[in-house]
Length: 314
Ligand SMILES: C[S@@+](CC[C@H](N)C(=O)[O-])C[C@H]1O[C@@H](n2cnc3c(N)ncnc32)[C@H](O)[C@@H]1O
Image 1 (spheres, rainbow, N blue to C red):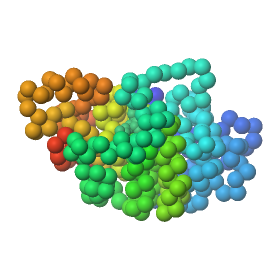
Image 2 (image 1 turned 120 degrees about the horizontal axis):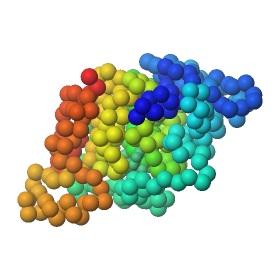
Image 3 (image 1 turned 30 degrees about the vertical axis):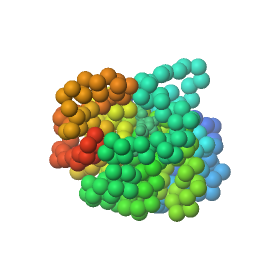
Image 4 (image 1 turned 60 degrees about the vertical axis):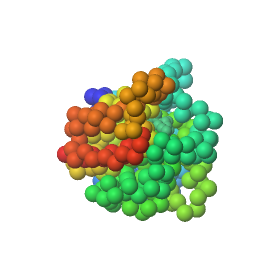
């Protein structure tokens, strides 16, 4: 984590203007603004022909997505794709490959990304998930202390909730972040098809939840819908979320519980076996994860195997 806190976080950091393009042309200044955290980073010559990279209150996404970045502290470069900014460590690597656990890799599959909002997600209702509209309403209640701030929807998938957060107008900026390139492409397509979403305040970023590209204490709200069970290390991820949140910032997550209150003792070992591809937790484990990572005011709402939990950075 030390590596993350000294380099990558600065890429979208409001506090450290340390990313430069490795170009011979003078770098163009690119301004990421949020109402609370005005910031400046340097962008690439690839975008230097853009008349205006960003306005005072919004992202210029086409310009950002055509940019490349280099951290002038650690020298790490980051590539960008047509429709999202790739801030993973492996961004731009040509020969080196790294495989994550199956529960992460599954969602990188183009077919899974295509089917996700076309039937896959609807199946969650059978386990007690109340459905996107209700989940969104519940999350918005928890996020009240973060209104007007920067919200990051980590593990956004194809952007089901990122779109709702962006449309709500509740936040100054929304970042839809996922590890899956195909989920982000699908997310981009859905956004493009919806005229009611302004991309001025919504950016798509590829990153690993265990290495978030944000300065410590710079994010007001973090949402992670149906994601905890998919992460390679839930403890690394929650610690990283806690690091990125500002004091008083809010984390809201949903997941499937390993057991619901109605799961019989006979059924429990069987459930453990069939669910071994994912990392399902008990209610106690989730609370323990949040509190030992430094989050406070833990609260939760449980309906059968569905849990929505919320906690705040002290
Ligand atoms: C079940 S989907 C949830 C999508 C959406 N948030 C929702 O509520 O429907 C889980 C998501 O977690 C993402 N994911 C898995 N491992 C990840 C990691 N290490 N970092 C970031 N995202 C990850 C997957 O790519 C996938 O899009």
